[in-house]
Length: 325
Ligand code: AMP
Ligand code: MN
Ligand code: MN
Image (cartoon, rainbow, N blue to C red; front, side, top):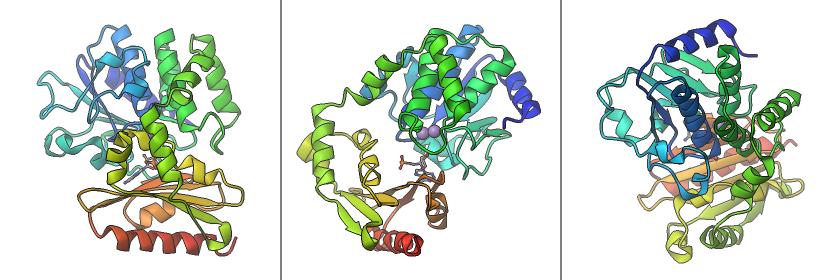
C-alpha cells in the first residue's frame, strides 16, 4: 500500500531539514490541522524547528489539538531559513492558499491521500487507499521508528476520525481501525476527541445548519439532493465560513439519495461546490470534469464566476450520473 523506498527518501529528506515549513489546504479541516500538527510534533520531538502555516491560521473548533498555538496564518513570504517545503492533505498546488502563489520555492514534499493529486512536489507520497493524510503520516512515522507522543497520537487520530466521518465511510477498513487502535494505545482519547469534533458545535454553527437544511431540494427520482448557501446566511446567523464543514453529510444521509451536493454562492460572484456519494457514483470524476477534484466519495469544485450557470451544469452532470441507478 505504501511505497517503502519512496517513504524512506521522504524520511531522509525530512530528517536532514533543520527548518522545514509545513503547509495544508485552504478552508482547513480536521485532517489538515491534524496532519500539520502531527508532523510538527514528530519533527519538534526530534529537535528540528518546523514552521506550521495555513491560510487564516488556527480556528476555534480545533484549538483543542495539542500544540494548536504553533499553527500560524500564511506569511507573505516564507521565513528565510526554510530549507524544506512540505504540503499536507492538499490535492492541488493552488489550494495551498493565495500567498503561496507568488512564492518562488518549489514544493519539496507532498504527503496526501487525494486520488486526484497530480504529484506537484519533488517527492510525492500519495496513498489514496488510506482515508486520511494523518493515516499516511502514521505509516511514515512507524517506518522511520520516530516516537509518537500522546499529543501526536491525538492529532493523528483526529484526522482519521474526521476524514472517515467517524469511521463510517467506505474507505474505512481493518487497517484503518487497527491504526486507530494503535493511536488509542499511544494516548489518543476517542471519547474526548469525538466530544470536541462532533458534540461542541457553536450556536452560530447550529443556526447556519438549520438555515441551510431548509434549502434542501430533492431531485432525480429522490436519488440526488442539494443544499444552497447564500452570502447573507453568515450575517443572519453569525456563523463563519468554516462552519459549513459537515453540513453536506446531512443530505447524503437520506435513504436512497446516492449523490448529495452543496452550492455556496460567494459574495464575489464565485461558486463553491461540495459533492458526496454513497459509493455507486464517482464524484471525483464529476468534479474533475469541471476542474475540481477530491476522492470517489467526496469531492469539490471552485468556480470563479457564472455561479448559477455552473450550478445548473453540475446538477445536470449529477442527474446523468444517477439516471441509470
Ligand atoms: P469538501 O466538500 O470541501 O469537504 O471537499 C471534499 C474533498 O474534495 C476534500 O478532500 C477536498 O480536498 C477536495 N476538494 C474540494 N474542493 C476542491 C477543489 N476545488 N479542487 C480539488 N479538490 C477539492
Ligand atoms: Mn482535508
Ligand atoms: Mn484529508
